[in-house]
Length: 525
Image (cartoon, rainbow, N blue to C red; front, top):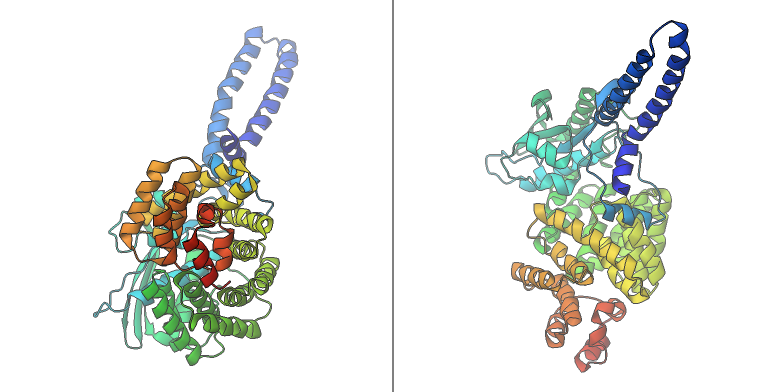
């Protein structure tokens, strides 16, 4: 009921209903006094009452279906109903409100641009370009843009655009293709209105690679024009480099990073390094280099040379742009990679100060606090990240152990329901995502769904039995399930830190076991 009332309020139905009832009451009072004076029969008042009664559901239906905007009356944008789980998660966090919702009818998805090159060797460049267009359009406040995760779920598929738009709850789809040969690039793009399957705009750019910045800028401008949105005072395209070659490396690096696989992240590191070699002032490449090497250090055990590269990249980003939130994020990632958690936390908090709706910064403040044993702070920032990013399944699921440790059963169940629901939605599009499975297992355990948790555990282990994060999280599951030896077998070949496993309540049943104590002693903080 809470979710339904919120939807009615957001669409203006409540306001219209109250206004209608007040106006109807006034009309009846006037009719009751005026009609007898005009010699009209008493049945005329009854007729007015009947008409007003019939008009009420019609007014409510119109208020639900249409919105009044500065451009006139428009059909209301389809909204995904706010689930009780998500609503509770939002109430749990005292975080800044996300930006105001965009004008109904102005929403878009960008489908991955396929590689049409003769050699079919530009897939990652195409993926990077698609991500860049998503980033550009996301900077338009009046436009709702479907997330990268959702858009890339359709990569390589022959899809019906109306079905895509319905699933992503958008009104428009931007699609295209890329053909690259040497320094020449041909990019086609078209904007389609999903409801009518009509082309609002299309263009083919046959240019030198040096014109890639102008192409992106023009695509964004044409989308804005087609959707009758105003150009921003700030430039939408923010490459932070004038080198087309450096930018080419950067785009390809982004394409490899999307996979989050060990091989993809290693290749992304090489390409981001080439980008900063081609242009040492390339801010966004330094930020990306810090992010990807920190990810490899934190989750894939790249102890050498990833932490050092991440630290250097974060410092370079800060020197180039000390007032940008993403520069502080980059330096925070570098500190995290080197296990300097207090320094990392200061940078993440500064990033939040500069950009309060940075969900990823809140997530990493929580992780930093967790490593330092500051559970209350970790819980606070996991909750804020959960609120700010409706697709973030990691934060609520990582918070479960803290709720359990503090005895907050209600909070634990709330976070478990939120995390599992979001993980399930993610797995619909990415069925082989091990992280969604093994983090979701913790939520299933909290909800008492042990049989399903075992199914998820065996499934994710079958995807890649040698993945270190998978082995760690499954160790946590088997420790809670009472299978101590299997939990220890997995934990000894996982990659983690002493502070994390020492504070992880999922491993409580292993404490005091000689193998666990020996492992704890061998790890660095």
